[in-house]
Image (cartoon, rainbow over all chains, first blue to last red; front, top):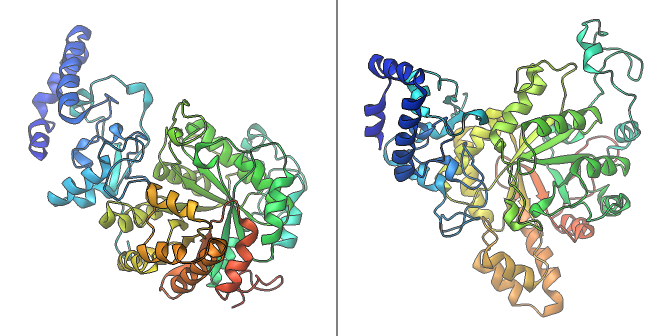
Length: 147
Length: 355
């Protein structure tokens, strides 16, 4: 999963592509539809338009019934399943396991800021490449003694 | 206990001038006498905070507002606890079922002479309503706020309701802290005067992912939590392990930790908890004890177990107090506390427990 991160990392080429796409509504819609089908297939993406996957162990927090972006609620079952949909594994149990196995548990200590609901349905890759996602989360909240 | 302070605030405070007038910048400086004209911040001394900061073992209890429009119901539940707890949590439509509003319950508790901790969930309100309620609470002198995500509507009496969850509990803590400490809303607009309350969060030490739970509390503290109340603890040893992780991270030095406890009052309640209240685990030993006594002794045994748990929790370093959740049996809280060796709260002098 983290490989994907490297593939999509912003660069000048992507930035130009994003700017070019933004100016062409029809192509942008086509691009957005492609992004949607790829991410829906892999992550169950809901198209919130503010993708946080790289900082949540590539687990989509918007698939949580409470859409919690900052960690699990207190109702996770002993078996690690969701309290609302017991047939589903808790998104955050999954996120923690993945982030930990990749040596990135501190990612989950980032404070994910409230999302902008105007962006639902829009391409987050275009935003990401243009550097507009930078305010989505903070540095990991220090949980160590003395901050 | 909270007598004078609460009485002073129980009556409706003089109206605070609107934003526009205050925004003029001609506001009187701090230190002016309360209840005179001009913008002012109502004194919001949290006795609960004072108790925690004094280092005394602090007890709070949970009060569920009624399903009805009778404010007297709160008073009847709160009155027997007045001398026994430092503050009472007023729940916010607990279990996603409609009850009298959290803010109204909090005002009723204040009128009855007990300091409220107003619970505020993210389930039913978007960021506009949440911030508005936070301002309202502060303006009316509610000194403590406990922020939580909230149960999903699916578990409540309106399972067909729209779940809001516009913010999550960490984002709401962060927003509330910015309102208070930086005097601004999420939108960036200035608040004048800014609100003031003692801010808390909840945590469930026993729910998966177990190795993340202490760090998650650290995250809530970083976002703004000054105290935390936990989900029910039935297994003090397991809680102690979590506390060791919390101490390891130094979180207990930045946040007062109250362990949640409660009596299991019947075999039906036990079966309900065992069958799966998400995030709650009853150890086999506790279940065995409750099933091992005659039917009419189960409630007393539940109280004894709860009292023993409190005594064990008191010995864990970093535990600042307990939060007793005996919803439906609030009147039995004093019995539990007495059995746990916790006397009444001193009426004069220190706000915490005497023993």
